[in-house]
Amino acid sequence: MDSLLDVRHNIPWRQAVVSVDQFSRTDIEEIFSLADRLAVGRTMPLTGKCIVNLFYEPSTRTSSSFYAAMTRLGGSVIPINEVNYSSVTKGESLEDTIRTLECYADAIVMRHFDDDASERAAAVASIPVINAGSGAAEHPTQALLDLYTIQKERGCVDGLTVTMMGDLRYGRTVHSLTKLLRLYDTTLKFVSPRELAMPPDYLSAGDEQSNDIDDVIGNTDVLYVTRVQRERLSKEIAIDDSFSVDFAYSVTRDHMARAKEDMVLMHPLPRVGEIPSELDSDPRAAYFRQMRYGLHVRMALLVAMIGRD
Ligand code: NCD
Image 1 (cartoon, rainbow, N blue to C red):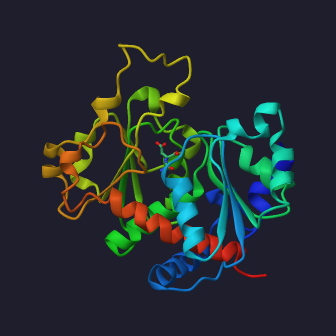
Image 2 (tube, rainbow, N blue to C red; image 1 turned 135 degrees about the vertical axis):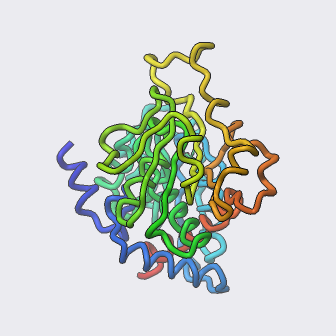
């Protein structure tokens, strides 16, 4: 395990993105300014380059946005979106799969159900690995695009109060975003049922925890909503009639009426009832713009990581 922790803390992010722990504010500014430029540019700096999309878990946005980012930059993609049709079903180890794919590509974008999968992949890979979601632990590229969205929508991140609501225990996006926001002067509030509270490792003095959005909605600048990660709920939290949190943690018109006029409403998506579609036309609903910002951030990461020979 020590060697895996070494990977997380010692590898520069240009070689492998496994965790948000690898980024400083200066790194983030650099990625965001590259994203700004690529959003309006027409250049193809990745012509002749190739990435593999290696997804052991379902994905719509992350896999297709990396695909779109790569092809818009002139490169190509080997999509392994359904590992059931690959040698993984024959019992091939993750390490051997990585050693195979690095023979064909310039980077591997990987989503996996194990928390330490991207560290394991980065430890054996000779090409950049990008963590596109690892178990309940991290989703660093989502956190970067979430932060970019906040900056774009509000102009800056410092000084804001960010409230995260929903499944804070198993949601990897909120874990990565929380760590990234610690680099800024933000106030963090966490709203969840007790069973799905933010794990203590991510908490800091000054954070506010509540099980009721009404306690915090009026003071919130960014409301980041997540779905319950049913596929990750442990046996101790049985999914039965006595534990139905899905709709108890949804945003309503009434909440929006009491929210600040310039509040930003975000969601990594997919949503499954936490934000009703009747709120989509509210100018504060940023979750569709968030996906577009994500394309630009992923373009920037690809150029920074494999754009130079
Ligand atoms: C998230 C994920 O995979 O963690 N999806 C995404 O990448 N936008 C959020 C989720 O699945 O709830």
